[in-house]
Image (cartoon, rainbow, N blue to C red; front, side, top):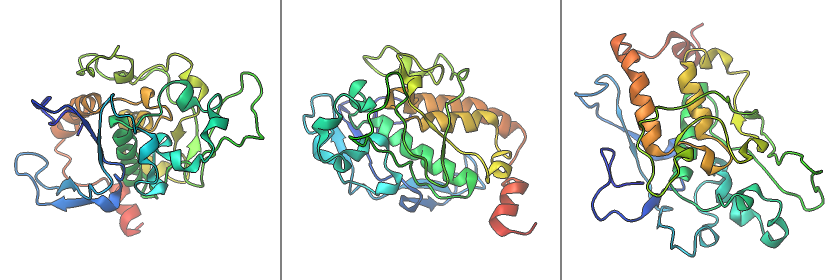
Length: 262
């Protein structure tokens, strides 16, 4: 959706497709691919009714695209419809302050991260609630924060995590967004989402690399999230270990949580 194809940019593909409604209900399972993960159904993304095609010259982005998609799985930059008097938030909204409020492929990444978290924790895929109440001016130097719901808790992302430096960067980019590593330019002042109890048992069934990757996909500011090429490259690198073990079946812990067989 970002470049026109997984293998590389497609000729004539000059706009990013932002789905805006990526959630488990819009992912269906097709027959397995005999050449890859042959014992698992192939996931297919459906329902592009809310999707938009956008580029840097799109003057409606983000102001003209409010109230699209399911609000409970919206990324932070999708909440324009909830800010009725945006002028009051211009100096206080970290998305505007960092120029990160446009909807783009990083919006897709956030929603894919929510789906991954739901699968890994056997829980809901609700995004965090956040607000900038005009009567709650934060003191000098205090963090902007958003309010966690009952299944997601705010916690700074790990500072020492990076993807492969050979991951293909975005055009006209300095590379920083593609590196899932230390947050630069003050981004660490904003709290990112991360899960914890009561799902620690399920999370323990997955590699720390996967948990950290999903956490970075769910960062508040789009700039801090990896792009699609980085997610794909990093995932393929770490899947090599999984494939060598021939781990075709779901983990024992996942079975226990799914079927409650103790």
